[in-house]
Image 1 (cartoon, rainbow, N blue to C red):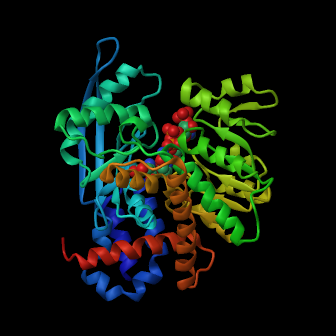
Image 2 (cartoon, rainbow, N blue to C red; image 1 turned 180 degrees about the vertical axis):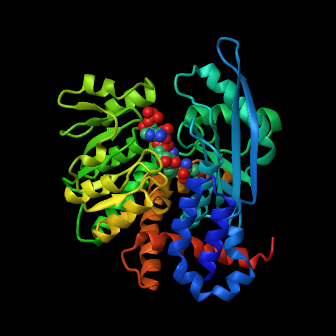
Length: 444
Ligand code: NDP
Ligand code: 2IT
């Protein structure tokens, strides 16, 4: 059996109850085949793929906090430190009831390659908890965050592991966590990113994932002879990534006609009113029904449905496996030209293959949503230098990073005879740097 299949079989056997993690590993290893085949003897002897698919460390702990009625609540906290070959572990914290070992491991594994693609010195990690911040008071969220850091502080540090936001973790949560870390350690250091601007945060970090997604999408379109002007975009989600993706898409002249949340979705043929969306989601923390109630011409529909809308560009920005084969078929039937992932692994393997076969330009999340973590790394740089860049400086660096990622993944795909396959290109380019660093550092 060849080395990739051998490792895949072992990973499947060892992690049988972790479907999301297996999905992420299968996608990556499958597209690395030509690189592995070219170096099979060396990689096998070094057990490179076994090392890459086994986290350096998995931390799982109990998180106790007291709710507003006086009731003690119990949650599970996680941090998976996956690989630090090219820099300190770096990756977000997801707070959502669905969080479990499989989810955290898939996200941590993806993060290795994504962080490598940014060109910045950051390794891969991810964490979170099954705590649901929805409907909780600020005090309850603070109690949870303080208790979570009470355990996690032992394992993180500005040069060790630097967590950040993800689903359910925004500026409010990062603020509470940062305060608790400082209280416990006495250290004022850049241990978390996505901080508020008054205590070490970077301008443009809030916008970075969504803006970065549009910078790479525009470059992709440009290199295929198209521009963003008047393009119809369907976006899913209505959180941090979706909001700033919609904002930048419209600044570029496209028209965003959908957003969604876990209960339903909005169809707004005149174009999403981003200021209204921000007010509802960032200030009021309310549901999308309020958007339809406030915006003439917009319709609210329950359940799923974003991918049924005819569009030129689809930008899934909510969660994993939200775009399946039937959705991909609807997108192709509607003439969609490009799918760029804002979320992590939002497109199923079947749907990805179908879109690629049908000639839809497809950029996977580890390349297209890398702007968030790249700007987190820029925040780390500013913290180390004890200075703050302007919005324009940070945003210009982000744009250059995203354009560079596009050409890097395009070149990697061409080098292995897979022109236009940006999934393979992203996995190969991300892998090469990490693999070289691992081999150079010996068995450790
Ligand atoms: P937010 O919590 O800000 O927003 C998440 C959005 O997705 C909400 O609209 C939420 O709806 C929706 N959503 C979440 N879970 C589900 C679900 N199971 N089914 C349907 N809808 C769901 O998170 P972000 O915008 O930060 O993250 C979105 C995606 O982008 C995630 O995959 C994340 O990993 C990825 N990402 C985030 C980065 C960042 O910098 N924040 C960087 C790179 C990737 P509701 O409010 O109803 O739950
Ligand atoms: O998935 C991701 O890249 C993030 N949630 C951002 C991670 C970070 O460290 O900024």
